[in-house]
Image (cartoon, rainbow, N blue to C red):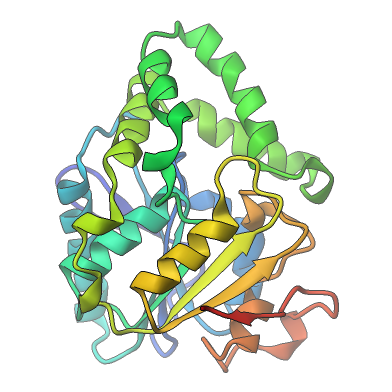
Length: 279
């Protein structure tokens, strides 16, 4: 495990396999890399997987988060030089991934965005929730996570145990930190990024049943800024799609040529793999 002075960590999800490409997962607002776990078994046949863990009381801004994540990735790369690095950012982590790629354009080789929260600045509820969350007493805040959890997932596609893991991760984040991360999303603007520096291939997963953010339209918008983009539409998925039993990220990545070495034995027949080229 590698740490920075402010305790961001890259957690090894599988035994170290330096012969495989590095896969770095940047999580949503919960900051818990553990929520990639439903996808790890499939991905592990083709990647050496690391998940970013953000402390539940972290109050770093975008610049500090970006620099610390870059430092963690660079340490991993220096340990095993020459291998390809793929960054996958989900929701809040998608915004962090975009910051990372524009600030350090030569750091990584491929970018995957899963329902990125880059549209949050245009959602009126973000500001209201940011202001309200920091005022909530801890017990009320804990209760509010149940309602938010129902917005994040399609409950019939997520197992009871996985849903409980999501709740636990959400409730571990302190109200002040949750409010701060919402405020960061409100500040995030694509127009402020040097997206013309991103020449790497970009794969965007966009859920059609996302009740939290307009992920379909945001994927199309992002493709106008990032010309080397492919969009994969997920017709039955909610916002936190990586938690769904029916979704296999390794199947999608193999179908798009992101990692040809992924084992076919891990790919279910019904895994959603249909892709639509970005406009």
